[in-house]
Length: 167
Image (cartoon, rainbow, N blue to C red; front, side, top):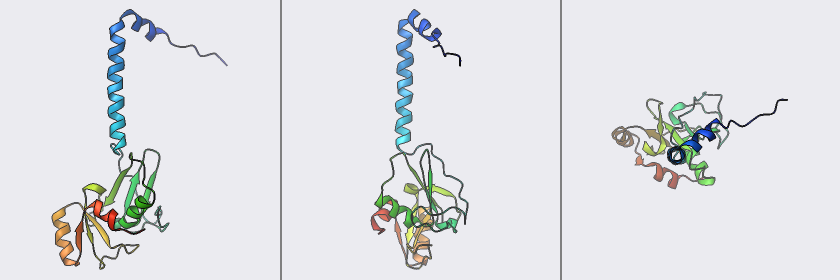
């Protein structure tokens, strides 16, 4: 097997212009810090493709069968799906995920993925969610408020959902 030799070309050029190497290191450090900050907020992690009736809920182990109630937690190396917004909230309470986790919920009407902290939630005993948490997520707070009146429910924030759900 051939022995690998270090490439000293870069070292030689940085020795010729001493100030230039420090500038490069400073710029690279800035970008590394910016990337780690964004990564710590779940930044850049997109929702994964859900396969209805194939993907199982990480919390209750039931098949995810209704997109309108689905949720997911996305990390750089894994995705956890949930069949009910309440399962995601209970999972977070029992074992908080790393800060670099992006949480998504499906909009009740459209099924589109939205960041959990940006959604408005309706909770009602009349909402037939898969695990009976009775929670539905909405992109638009106005629509959530209107539907909450129809189903005799309450509008909640993500923080309130997590506080209210009992594992």
